Image (tube, rainbow, N blue to C red; front, side):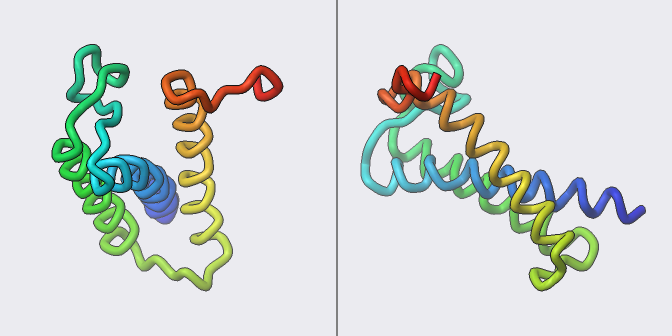
Amino acid sequence: MAWLHYLAYFFGGAFLANAIPHLVSGSLGQPFQSPFAKPSGQGLSSSTVNVLWGFFNLVLAYVLICHVGDFNLRSISHAATLGLGFLLLSLVSARGFGRFHGGNTPEGN
């Protein structure tokens, strides 16, 4: 059963990483890509939609990290699993959103 806890921590880190760009863009009053835009993930959603989507991701991260198993930030395996989920989704997001915001420079491709 412990592997399910690690899976929850991994996805908790991923949802935490996904919450950040949506909350920041929305809080700054800027539109940003979201699953609710047309086309999904490519078009821009309003700042309000992004704040709500970011907050939803934050709630999911909290549930997966704090209410599944007994997450211990001092445990290297727990923190590394969460960090790996955070890092992988951040890298995927950087590549995906970079197409729209000029973040994919020629030397980075």
